[in-house]
Length: 92
Image 1 (tube, rainbow, N blue to C red):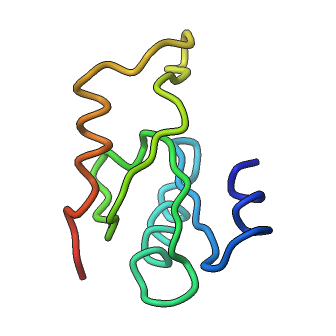
Image 2 (image 1 turned 180 degrees about the horizontal axis):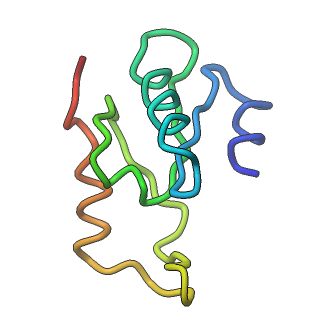
């Protein structure tokens, strides 16, 4: 829903990365986001904290909770730091 709303109302367009996305699709979305052009926004789950190199300048959390496969719970401090730590980590 969030990606659709962003695509309708803004330019640049929006990429999306989440844990259930196939690995090759995740890599393609990361490539599109990192490439200069029309993809300047990334909507993602905490999956971005797991080894993707992304040219992110700012991380904005819309929620500090997640479904972990068993229950809906609050993100732990180290999880927030890991996701937020993606900002500025990779500059192609």
